[in-house]
Amino acid sequence: MTKKISNFAEYFQKYQESVNDPEGFWGEIAEDYQWHKKWDKVLEWSFTGPKAPDVNWFINGKLNITENIFERHLPERKDQIALVWEPNDPKEDVVNYTYGELYEKVCQFANALKGLGIKKGDRVAIYLPMVPELTIAMLACARIGAIHSIVFAGFSANSLSDRIIDAECNLVITSDGGYRGAKSISLKSIVDDALKSCPTVKHTVVLKRTGDDINFVEGRDIWWDDFIAGVDTKNEAEVMDAEDTLFVLYTSGSTGKPKGVLHTTAGYMIFAEYTFKNVFQYNDGDIYWCTADIGWVTGHTYIVYGPLLAGATSVMFEGVPTWPDAGRFWEIVNKHKVNQFYTAPTAIRALIVHGNEFVTKHDLSSLKVLGTVGEPINEEAWRWYHDVVGKGNCPIVDTWWQTETGGILITPLAGITPTKPSFATLPLPGVQPLLVDNEGNELKGNSVEGNLCIKFPWPGMIRTTYGDHDRCYQTYFSTYKGLYFTGDGAKRDEEGYYRIMGRVDDVINVSGHRLGTAEIEDAINQHPKVNESAVIGYPHEIKGQGIYAYVTCEALSADEADSIENDIRATVNKIIGPIAKPDKIQIVSGLPKTRSGKIMRRILRKIGEGDATNLGDISTLLDPGVVDEIVTGAKVEVKR
Ligand code: PRX
Image 1: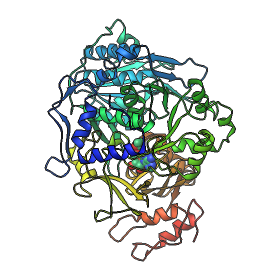
Image 2: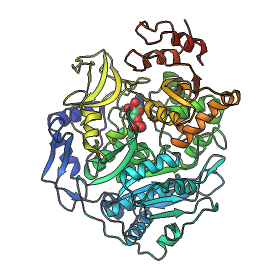
Image 3: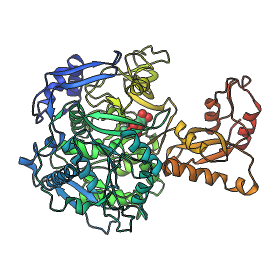
Image 4: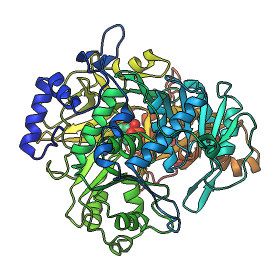
């Protein structure tokens, strides 16, 4: 087994090795895995050629990722707990799966999928709450080489059907419903709605979770329990090529509908485990908990694949941080004696407002490492996390990465890299970041700020966007030729530490959830009374960014005017889901546009931030008068 990095000098040494000889570096790590056939060459790549991006790791290697979770570990870990499931309601029983038990469940479900005719390369949509069966279903897909496309169970029927249609899925795995705090959500009815427009779906497998009545469609729907009844628990894994697709996960960008980010088998596998072990400094026997939802990439890589590939014990939580009360996280940490805890800044900020007592009344002495992900963490939240949760004893790893990167790229190594509040610090070995100005010139040296790019492939990186390779090139590789562009702005300080400043494109990050402003505008525009809209992100105390929508409407009756804001929210809820509902809606008579018709978002952003003092030159606008009207009616205190 490759050793974890154990001190700062070793980090620099490994980093240098990974840059001087990337193939030697990753090739040695890849030796730790079970292969049906080893690779002929570690890497071939181009970010610029006719097929760009064209990135191939471990060429002609053959393997199955689930054999590297199970068969590789079973001799030592058959009776070790792989997955601890903590239900939404603390009164409900915890469910544990050992590696041996999880293996049998995965194999059985894999056989059942095969029995239904699902085969290598087929796409399977999974729309489940945070129950262990979600992990079982995804690993069963990987076992037989089917491509899982997991859709966060907070998305609407419309978002679900868009994703199913784009990937041409032929099976949906779902449940009758799910719990989130005091609420229960009927997922099956959302699926029924979505499937009205998805002709490729032949079947749905339905897990019983809430026991609510469902509309059971004979011939299409199959209950989970019936699906696996009497099915063999032994399964021979499908042999996959290193570059065969493992999964697709949809994510928002600055234009168009969400795209299916595609990850392949061997590179993702190796990167997931390597980053997990090194960043969290996981030791055998530790209990690790990532609070994310598996519907997002964080859950894919750091609840399921990374920890299980590393032979870890991973906690999976169904509920929310504030129910039954704001001490729920800390109660769970104490109950399971969690050693590494990984969450989002938005959750931390939401908990701060409830006061320290919810933390201090629980014994958190098991904690060794704290992590954050998904958005910049402000200094106040960082300090509270460090002082109140970690009692000053736990290093915080502020991990920067993206759906497209597959795993963490810039981060401290827990207890090894000296940390600084709100700095993601240094790149992991194998990761070569750089900052460029808007013309693409590299900003060399320290104390610089620019657009964050990566100049060399890493094993976990995106290979394509499902069904549209050119979109992948255009989105990530065309802005700065020869570089992967992240869409983020960053600073490199005097010590060479990276601080992520946030998105520089039309993407906003609401409670760690990524949304395209264009996508929200499209949803708002579907309201029959709306003419046009412009959406921007504005600073929000808990969510990081809130959604501010400026909207022009047709003439409204008095009743319509009263209800228009809520009606617009309902429209967005229906088209995308609750996470995309605007926090602020301002009905305006016009939007600030250039004479060529382009909306001047820069101006709207300034107003949304409450800073109308310096709007720059507005005399070139088609109708400068609308700016005054917007400033006067702004839903924030606007300084002028
Ligand atoms: O803007 C960055 C922000 O989240 C974006 C990626 O979102 P998504 O693909 O949904 O993945 C989130 C979980 C990996 C990035 O472009 N982001 C992520 N982590 C951080 C962050 N911003 C600042 N600091 C972070 N640690």
